[in-house]
Length: 170
Image (tube, rainbow, N blue to C red; front, top):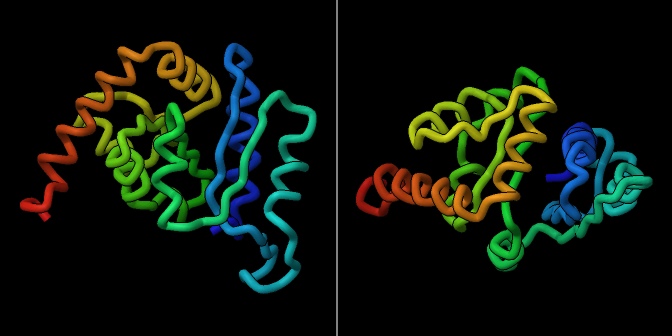
């Protein structure tokens, strides 16, 4: 849902603006309409919000309507995913399901350093969780610069998924 995600959109802009060595094209898959209050009031197109946030940056973006049929094909066309979580007590309690979803598609992920993501990253002995802008910049640059590191990361993630989320395990 795009509702309430302006802080996440702004955080993504801040993070990606720190990485000038790559030509960044980010893909958002979310609702086409943003409601500022209660998911029902003061509607604005999500595209307009993103256009305003990414104005005067070298970051290009694409917006797609959330659709479970096309989600996978859009996601797997990317090099990696990022999941920044604002420093909001409720959002910090999110489970690892989005991280696992991206992994199941073969996509390495850099995340905020929240308990659920940190626990799963520790289980695969990878350290792609971030607590500050410096870490975001370094970890995205590191993965973006090395196919070998992305492959190693995804081998560990794939092993984790097979061990903990296989059909037999579930």
